[in-house]
Image 1 (cartoon, rainbow, N blue to C red):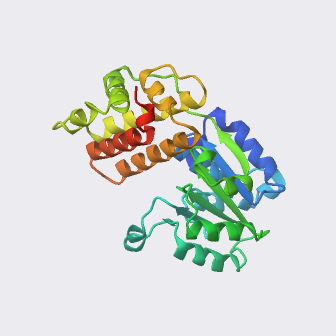
Image 2 (cartoon, rainbow, N blue to C red):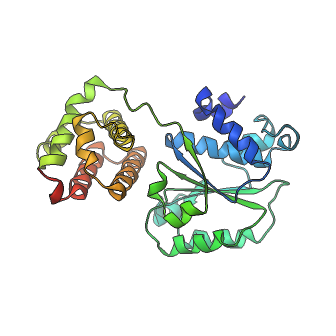
Length: 300
């Protein structure tokens, strides 16, 4: 049933992780960190966890049924005891177009802390999803840390990130971490080889890529999305110590913090495409930021 309800984690590769969450449900950690995989997989696995902690059938079977009204509400993001916040959502967008996922800012943290004083609506636990958090300790992050220092048996937090290095170490240290299967980093899209090479040259020498991207009709959203995926696979190979292509070599010069920042920027670029930002502008901005991040010491 989870194939229809939570399709991103329907593959057998996620059975081990779902089994681990089923076992954790008997004594759930207050903070769970899900890293790796893609954004849809992390989100579906977080929803599976929320089902495990709230499905009435899970009390006996130790796994969610994924077919009752509660499980279906959780899967759609509409369950009253499921809250979701994303640091990539701007304050203005949050006010003008409020959705099921709200911005992560000081106002929302205050509202959340007030909400945590009340018991959950149902018989299970309230689950709070936190996405798009940065390495910056701003006011909202500090308030969140204080909230996590005051454990509540009725509330569980889930942090979602491509890599744990993209989060504050103080958040990671409070978390039980699970790593989702990484995307196949060796699969290559031959049609994108010229674009990968052009980006690698730009990151090394600062020339060529911006002109190519800005040419009229050169890039659409689909091509930009595929190129971003190539960048993510290149970063995955670098993290695995398997750099083998020109783009890998360009990213391999980044230190641990730089690689975490790169991963965060790639996620931001994907989000910008989803919101309809001009694909060429998304790629130009990403390339320029990565060129600066590598710095003059990385240039040959």
